[in-house]
Image 1 (cartoon, rainbow, N blue to C red):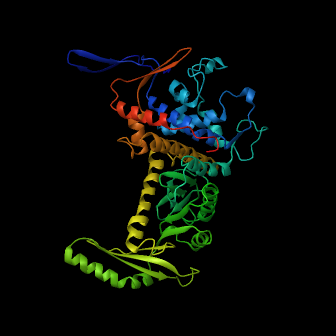
Image 2: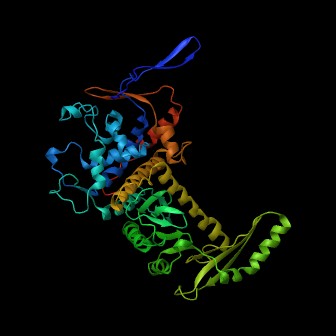
Image 3: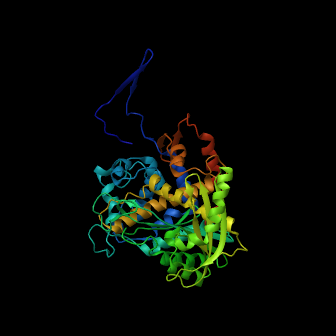
Length: 474
């Protein structure tokens, strides 16, 4: 890896009688050698190959050195390895390890057509930026920006990947819906001030099944949190039922998704739901006896107390029918804390306590998955001028999350890092120093002998080697 440095030698604090000096002269050393595990995941699952198939490349093949698939792989691998900015790629394009991950046959870049490009095996920021800036109507007659993302196919990609990673259909799945804020700091198209989050932001809609991402839709912030949820749920349910016609589906969300259109759609399409229900004076009157009982229990024991009530309820105007509601009468040191949920699940399937504590409260795990994507994989790096470009950035982050989730699912199972967050996986398994040597017949990767996670790395490698490749159809 070539690095320009004006200071050839660095003199640090001495060690006893010894001087401590440093130079950038170690050769082609990478700090991301653990990314080879991600390459193994890609080889076994084809996640990035499927993702790249959602783009149409109108460029002249005779003049292309970096295919659309290579550009997308470079961007996604870099996000997974912690490089959020396009500017990072002007340095990363020298890295032979990232070139290996992308699949470049010439990882040193010595065979590039132009002399000034030699030694740079990968694309720079200007080439990669064309992915984000290509307009929807671009074709072969466009001048520069003509790699078109097919949005409908990308939406389908995440669900198809989820299905492919689970060849045996489960009896039941839970689809978690949530909206979150994506703060913006410029004048991007679609940004609005949101009173709840007290700032200018986007309001993306996420849908997960467990730790698997099924949808990440960027939306302006001047809408209801549930806007568009019926369309997204209907699309996902249709895709799932084509492959798994008998699976039982439950849609789960907070009170922001307790909307008549979504509940009616679920009831008409054999989909169960469990939503939070915003409290009001009528609901509190219904729960009054239980709230008093919970207060007496707290006063007697000094410990938080809960009493549940199962009843039917219908709003005066907005609901079209009577529905099952469960109320939680809770009393804490700070006072009363009533909560309500509405559901199509019957009392025979789940009693009031199990419905709330075991099923509804489990939706909080989805919030951890959203945090992973925003904090660890830069889903909030939506600084482009247009929503189209920012939506693509969100999808690139989502593809990186999907790749790391597959590594966790198939590689980390049975290890001490089976439940590790994406940034922990990156720090301990991907950010490994190694010397890269390229010969005619082989690429040698020499890891640091002092790596503290050698045993876990070996376990993950063996887990992935035993994983059978998926078929092209999933």
